[in-house]
Image (cartoon, rainbow, N blue to C red):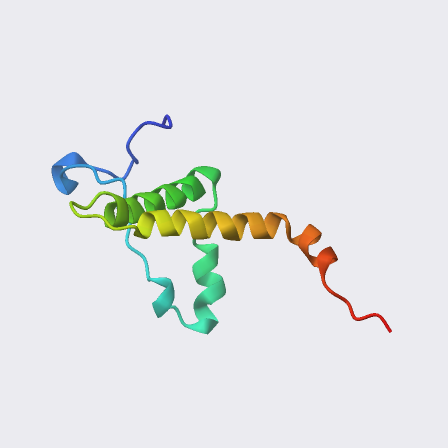
Length: 107
């Protein structure tokens, strides 16, 4: 399966037009409904391959895009999300430099 192919679970006769924001695999128990004792078993069932992880991020991006970027009347929300995300990212990568500039009280 190449990168640009559809997922193997996708069947156009069953699912209709392809939606990149939808997971076409077997439905599983949502994380919010997993009991604490079953959490380790639920995590061990996950597919942890690089392709599956890339698919998770791709679906998350398309869900965000369908909700905030592609509606008929969009707002400034996507711009605010990008600015806040970049601020958080740059804060975390520069945290080591930032903590050295704290103001200490010298006696």
